[in-house]
Image (cartoon, rainbow, N blue to C red; front, side, top):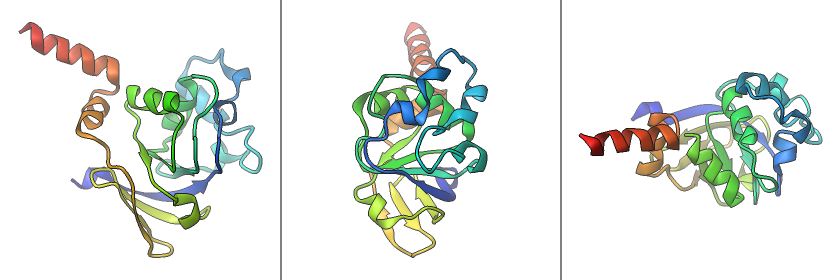
Length: 172
């Protein structure tokens, strides 16, 4: 399915990117995801202008343990609202991974991706197969594909709408 093949530019981050670096706690009172987007990575050294410079369709590429720290859905909402269609990381903090899936936001595990992608590289990501092509270098990587259940959750816009739909089906 071509709608599950995405193209965009890479923004590369390191290991242990915690939720305060993704979305700082001083903005937690903001409840509108559209407003949250402008503060994405504002406190990440060297990427303070990420929210101003990233374009819809760009990718966040990260190392190990992306999204560690506090459990805050804001760190998912801000990137999703900014138009980042998927995060590609070597591993995720479990709570961030669950928050992303629960909010219908794809996150792929891609071993050694930070060794194979540089800032600004153009990537093609196939959510169905987990194949990532670095169009700049020609390198092909393989990550975990989005599962069928995750696709269903994404199609409904998140876990709560998905569960409500499942409950409605069972009541029929």
